[in-house]
Image 1 (cartoon, rainbow, N blue to C red):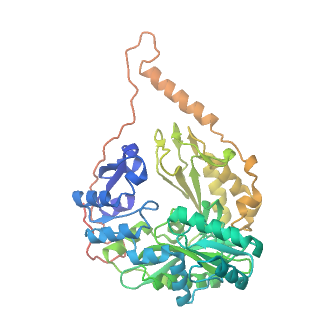
Image 2 (cartoon, protein in one colour; image 1 turned 30 degrees about the vertical axis):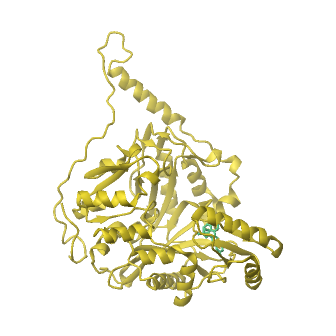
Image 3 (cartoon, rainbow, N blue to C red; image 1 turned 45 degrees about the vertical axis):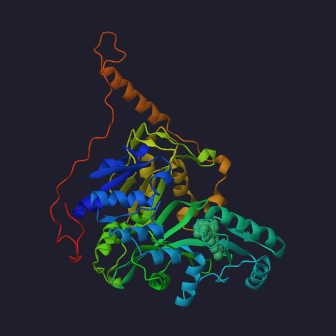
Length: 499
Ligand code: MV4
């Protein structure tokens, strides 16, 4: 919405009942209710969203990160309704969503990937023989998977049968698709992903990599750009592979190619994400390119205004994900009212928050509060600045992952850049993680409420009756923004509707 305001494009939000006065609703120029709290009754109802978009005259939909952002039927439904889906065509979403189809495309394109099967493996006997050919340890993965669902590591032949069944069963119940395939297990990899942009005219560029190895149970905790382990020659090779991967499915829009990088600097295709990702700000900061603006320009039909050689990297950016979760209790979500939310600021700090003070972190959706991003001229400076910002961040009312992020920033293995996807498991005991230290902020927030009540006459013996001013929806002001042509290098073609 901020990008749209800069481009002079009006925005419309859709919301579920509990989100009636949520930040995205307050920020949009218009907003429409689409259903109940459960996402299956609102944010995932394709027909309702298309109907709303048509009724309000929206000419494009940005699908965000979760929900329908990688749903081929939604992309197709937009196309059928004559609405621009800001993302790839259904065919690209389908072929990258099916991991066996993706492997088959990568094989044809000559992109390195872990040794293993291309087709799905449908019987125990054929699975066992493939596993012997590949050599243990192997990984059984769901064809419809991603995010680790249905995945099993098999370290020797005696375990194969039971893990094969377990993987198929989990895949069937999670995706309604029991197909699995088998890969060589890469044991202590780093997760390195490349950002790509592809226009409608066949131009594809990459915007370097993000290091995403610091994760817990397939949930990313810290991401950074660039990775401290790539030199310029490896970066060039991986970037070229990412571009070829995008070409192999005729990709259009912003996308991410995920690679595993082993200890000997061999890289392997893992998956492609056909959406903009949560961690995109680190790429924006080191390249100076607004990725949402790029998505919109691409959807309008503009050719990419940069050649690969013109994409430059400046400094280092780190993102910490701030969740309403309690690290001391196995990261259990802790929904509730944010009685205090004071985000850090200053040079080199960006906070992308989905909420403001006095908003509620709902039980119905992902408990992310914000993304805290720091920039530095080099990695050490970005880390110091992140620690400063984590210390400055005041949140009360819900537990947060801020103290855990601080431990990561202070950890010697993180600081030296010596880590793999096992970092959190290797270095943190789940029973010894810090409880939340919001006591001071709770006290401040409560004394502020008490002062307000006092000023409003509540609790004053002879005072006038008063009410506490609430933080109801302030109404969305429609800002008039002048035509910004001349500001950006994009050429003007079939623009989306301007305000
Ligand atoms: C792998 C792998 C090792 N070898 N594939 C994790 C979820 C899904 N995206 C694929 N994943 C992995 N695939 C081979 N052949 C290790 C993982 C993996 C992982 C990858 C990236 C970041 C964190 C991870 C945590 C556990 C496993």
